[in-house]
Amino acid sequence: MLASHAFVYAAQFELTQNTSALHSNLRLCGGALTDCYRFAQFHFHWDETNVDGSEHTINGGRFPMELHIVHYKDKYSSLAGALKSQEKDAVAVMAVFFKVKLVALY
Image (cartoon, rainbow, N blue to C red; front, side, top):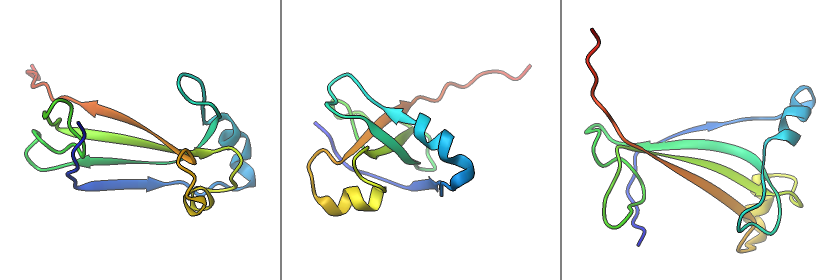
């Protein structure tokens, strides 16, 4: 079961001719995906408690932070174009959950 919650930080990348090679190499393919997807942006969700900042839950449990790595299907020229299409698999988001571990600094 997934539930939503969030403070968010987003980093957006504008790709120019100078980064076209980098852009073409940042892809998500394989697994359950039937197409390849281009990297568009990543963003984090967290809160000030370091306990329950994740946007989603696993079995009702939250995590201190969640990273979303957003990709859009290769056939589109941009994330905006993919979102406009309203195609159910136009966008693929990889989520990563983080845990906090306290360690001594000495």
